[in-house]
Length: 132
Length: 387
Ligand SMILES: [Zn+2]
Image 1 (cartoon, rainbow over the protein chains, first blue to last red):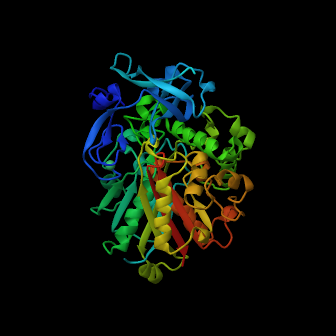
Image 2: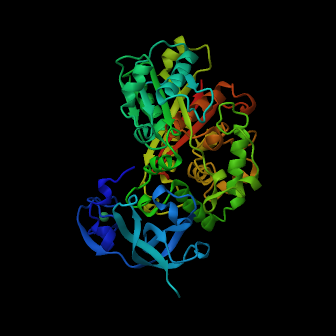
């Protein structure tokens, strides 16, 4: 399970949280797509996803994939960023026991994992709780 | 289309840790058992469900390799992949091959050799059924994905931790009567709930195991089955349904609803001209306890949200109104991913032949299988009826 192109290919959408919004029906896709599954339009505009959202569901990983073994237990969830649009990310900087569905979070740019001991460091987004 | 029948079935003597045998041997054992079951000495083509020969044993090109090892020289042989639904999909390809008139005697098999690699490598291989760039990248696992479904289901419907455990207890009870099961022991609600936590709220006893195993069935036109293979009850394949969905869980509107399962079920029932209430026995994809609850809802066996209370009530036990996973399911029987869909067909075939022994559902005439890929990104359903 060595490194593959997917880990060093550039992901502007991952670093800048850019999604594609269908110019015809408005459906949002992350990552961007070439055709809308709702209306079949091929025209999109690039939008920046909002930096805040709510927890739609979550879990606490206690048995982790090899690259994440040192981090257990860690929380991961599906975060709703726009009405009808959600994506997956870790929920950091909090006690996993305190996370609940409906909780408000904001997104931050963080290190996600590294490939092996001397491998490429991969960055992306994580959610952290918003103090009310 | 021609009507199609199942005439032969075969598995390994027992599923589990088959360290002394290679993938070619376990597949060939199951295939020969299926051919012996109906006394055929040749097959015209074959389809093999295998999720990841490449990652589990470093072997691709399985169609040719396994046809060669079966002594079926030069036949068309095709490896079929749809993650954990590979076996069910291989069966569907074999069904279409016979139904279309292209081939007469066709083998549908499935195999997975998962214990040749260590746990980390097996977990990685399985995770390739999820979205690598937008799910796995963040450190999610398959138990984690189904745990998220479970938490959403609990929040929406009030499904309880205990109801999840009931799925495991029931399937282990059934599996304890299945000599081929990898883990044929009984368990209790307390044991399930108090086992090692894998991804909250799922413990290790909510999760199906990694398994070495293979299964195979032989199909032919119904007319030929009536003429030449009538010494055993003839099992007709009356419905086949297949559907896909996004492989990323977060792209689905309702995290508790498996649309691919719903649609594959409806398509199979429509082809069969049956209603869900006509089904006497059912094998569904209980890769995790919550999966069985969601599948029984998506198939329409129970109303949305009623999967948990239903398993708790005992209605899905052997002897209940609609027995589910009489084989022990993936949980107890084992889950060699590519072989699972074929083993489900075998369990229903045995139930309809009336040879399931202590697991027999009395008077079963129509049965259904549901085989799922990933967290619901694909689903294949079949409906079988005894002639
Ligand atoms: Zn559109």
